[in-house]
Structures are given as structure tokens and as C-alpha cells.
Image 1 (tube, rainbow, N blue to C red):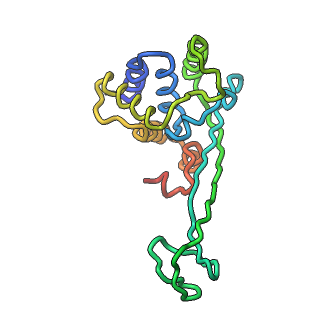
Image 2: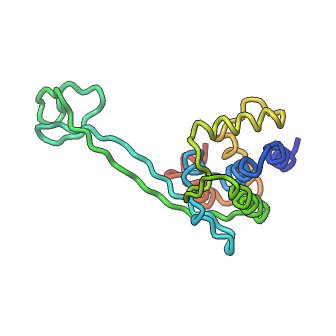
Image 3: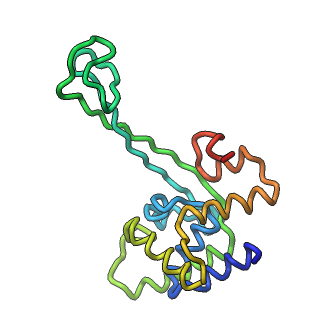
Length: 189
């Protein structure tokens, strides 16, 4: 089955405006599930047809308490000073990346429809999709089952989009930027 029909079939299988907007943004915007649940209503520019995605990644670094040398998880002795490490210093590092991607008119229409629909409910916060990552996974799996696609998960939607863009002749460097990959090697996989 051609991927455009499969894309439309997935969106049509969503039972309500929220799920249709959610699946369409993942399918046609290339957002990661963790990015999609952090999208704020203000991140969508309806006039320009763009979506700004902020990707926050937290990592921990372990350091020697004696000399500050970076340690691996299993280091018992510091490679810098040679002292035994009983309790390493844990340092959190945040990486915040931002990218702006184009959004097609059909997806913007679904988002507008969803925003109208959600006015009936008590939530009036700034998040576009106020649910957890796990709930997003459940929605995608359920919508995939309704569309007759077994084993569907959020990252497969990114792969579908990347394949579609690559088949249309999009440059690999531009594809890397649109998908938000730090390394071009990730895009090439």
C-alpha cells in the first residue's frame, strides 16, 4: 500500500480530534514522542505554518570527588588520581535544542479543530497534548491496530516521514536538521 494512503488511513483511524491532531503532527512533523508531549500551543505559528520544537535532554556525568576527573559507571578507582572512589559526584547536564519545522495545512487544520474541541473540557493549560509519554505510546498503538497496522510505535512514524522526505529528494543535511539529529550519522542509518 502506498505510504500516503497509509498515512491518511492512520489519521482517519483516530477516534477523536485530539488523536487525529496528535498522529498527524507525529506523521507529518517528525517529532519524537517526548517532543510532541511538550509542544505548547504557542509553539505553533498558524500564519507561517511552522512548529517550533524544543528538545530537552538530561544526562548525568560522574566525577571523582578528589580530582574532578570524569568517571565511567563502573570505575572503582579514578583514572586521573588513582584514588578509590566510594561516592562519585553526580553532575546533571541539560542540553536544550530547538528547531523549527514546516507543518502542512491539513495538519494545521486538524490542530485548529482539536483546539476548538478541547474547549469543552476543563483543561486550559499551555500544553497542546496534556498527557504522558506512555499514554502517547498507547494512543499510537491503538490507532495502528484500528488501521490494521500491527506493532506500530512512535519512532516508526519518524522513519516513515524520513523515508518519504528522502524519496522526494530532500538533502541529507536538511533532513538531519528537520529531524533534529545531532549527528549526520544518525540520519544516514
